[in-house]
Length: 176
Image (tube, rainbow, N blue to C red):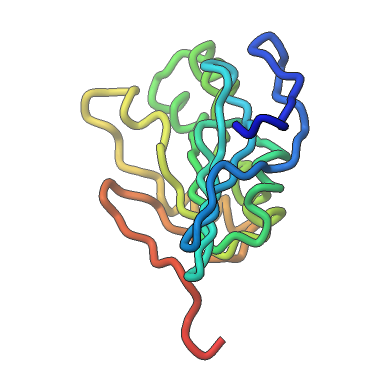
């Protein structure tokens, strides 16, 4: 962190304090910025943004809904955001106390559309999808149709349901 950055934050607080994004690195090809996000444990947790001549991409990291992240992602080309589907977890037999615990450090699918819309993200790429890898040795089929309709209530940009090794195009079409 830059030596002049001071934030009153600790793992004992219910959420990180509001803060402006700060520069982590910059050269002639990329500027990397970061902000604190709320993942409860471990602390600290960060979201990152990469700005290039080709566009911008913001990674949420693991977080509950975060005003700091929304500010970091303002007008980003691609917002890569982790999600959880708490209702799906309950429907597949996960104990309510476990779902409640996970909601303390992840963003529910019902909230992600509003986050992407408020940030002004052009593309929302869902990643680190919880709980499908922890509810069963053979995860249930992804409820992609339900997720898309849930997100569409609040967000009208491009939605990508992430898969391992998937590529998401960064940049703007020529002629813009």
